[in-house]
Image (cartoon, rainbow, N blue to C red; front, side):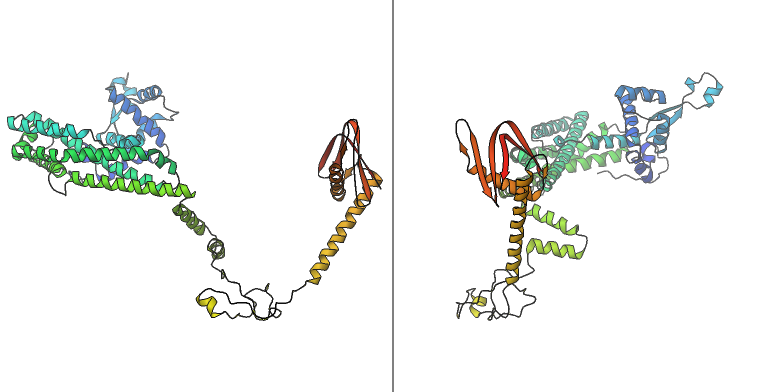
Length: 499
């Protein structure tokens, strides 16, 4: 890789004149408050550059924004001035637009991309336009690489410097692209592995295509690696120094000295040899090993996802959510409470031993308040409970609780009798029944419907409880009883409660 000196150098111009701070400031527009507006202005300049309109006025930028269908952009002139301050654009005067001296003094500016500004803009666009399709291994490139190496050897033998330059440049570009694709591909696999807990369906939908893609690439790489290594040796046999000299002579980079060009091409050839040369440390062998490892990792991930879906949720996902709950606890008491609820390790489990004198220490008393209980050696060592000995403990009776339950039962019976008397005295219509009356009426209605007798001309039903009787009489239409719980509609029946 070529090293770049970011310090000021005597006689430097163009992009070489940009210092480290200048190059970092080129990306200010991507983090500014009006970053979207800056981006659309730069896209307008890129559109003009594609149409060979290098120099643009503010009005020309506005026209291109309308042509691109850009969203609402504010003051274009202020945006252009800011981009000029950050050195993405270069500003100069346009005297041809001035009709008189006053207009000439008003400084009609024209703008164009700087070299560094265009590179910064393209870098941002590459990030914004990145797609998953870029992260894939290209197995169809190996036949082209082999053909280029064979053509490179023939051109070097015949002394065709231009052909040597073209083939060597193409090989360097292809290898760089393959290395970037491989790096993005393995990063994509890592991202997919990290997101499988939250979205396992994404991984399951791509698993077959991933495995097929990697296996085909591995097969092609294994098939072409020895042939590519032989082709590299054939090129080297034609003379490496002669190859470098031909490539450097045909190189048309103006601002490179001949010695710098030869060093650059020698370094590129060394990289090409390192990629496809013999030995276990070549980049081709490493790429093949990485692909085989990636296949094993994908299969292991598939196994984990399948087992997790079979069980409902993965253990790893459970522990991650539990850890998040612990970190979200407001204090230590809440964390201890969560620990107790999850793991239940605060008290003994699978152990139930009574005191020798159950009358002295009841079984309902807490372990914290009761005296210690002696444990049998067999229970401690082998887990076997000792056999019962002695008389059965006396049954304890809670008279106070029994009296309270009896009082509640009598109170409820009294309420229902009073409610029944109220139903018999005041009827069930033309008023709203309270809760005890509603409960009593529903009970009487249940008895009456269960004892209903049906004939061809008459439907009668009756039921009695709490000293009253409920009778269902047939009628035309329907009747409605209003209660605190809502309205009770009876189709073709009328209620009558009598003592």
